[in-house]
Image (tube, rainbow, N blue to C red; front, side):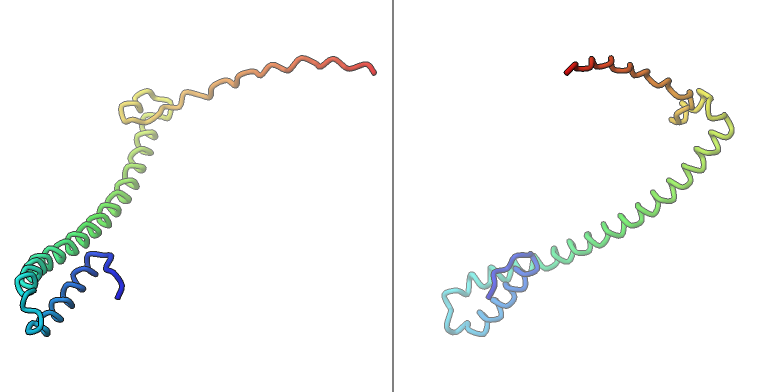
Length: 123
């Protein structure tokens, strides 16, 4: 039998162990107190495991809703930015109030000096 690796694997393995211990209780009376202890732990763990699964599902649902809202918000914000630019003009410094970059023209290209001519080798 393989060793459990996930939380669900542990819970399932414990359930199987408890069933086997209950079926063989006559042969293993000295383990009864530990069986009861494991049963109590399992009884406490199962609702917590279900709560965790529900929380994960709620988190995934919230993430999907948030992504949808962000997508819709980006679309509206883009529309508003275009309207602001259209109203004030693309060069207006008033755009900075809306955290938009006014068009200030292109920077002049830096002139790259031509490399000095290489002396020719006389052979």
